Image (tube, rainbow, N blue to C red):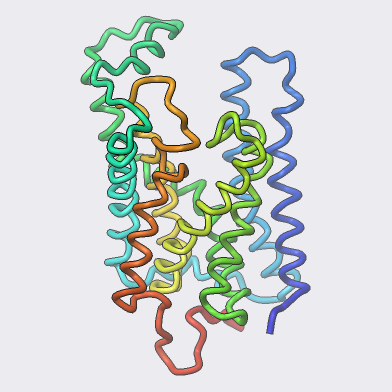
Length: 300
């Protein structure tokens, strides 16, 4: 049975907290471009904790349950953390390769985009270009996922740690898809400001919803197998770290709403194939350990 009161409180707190922070940059009309970009990134990083804060408040004061029911003290099967770290990297590589294959972007080993950024930097960067690009790639696939985990946990504690189990009475597939739709729509204020799909403020919202349903299915699979929000937070952090890497290797001017990132339709292909493999091999839906038991049970 769906707990409507809990869901209402969770969603209200999540959207009010996050959307205020998402929309504040619209008031920065007199701020210079660089300062506005940095300030916006900071505010949006805090906004990522909206779902997590909502999960904590709703758990403690609406559900009247212990903090431990959010399962932050649980890790689950360790092998899924390797999936969480490596799978996003593989999906991004596939998306980048398909972007080139379909002609949506052109390979640029002169790294024009990086050169232009270096040329406009206030201080001259005295380092070979290949070292700069190599350092960015190495950092993105090694340390960045674990640094990003701090902010990604704010989302995953809410979306997969709290919302997903609350929706489980609808059935596992419905719970996964519904949570993905809500997660996608939550991004709307950022999308209309040009994030992810520049030039497509309205269509981009629907594209983000599709992306979040697909990605949310994978993150839910990880969560349901570990019964822990940490694994989805690591995967989310890894995605945020590597999603834009292919852009470094493309000539400027390609349409990001078509390819080049995991959020673009070409990037969805790898996720669709992986989800199909999960279904084909009966890894999804995740089977209950005990007949009649939900994949995640809130603690009393």
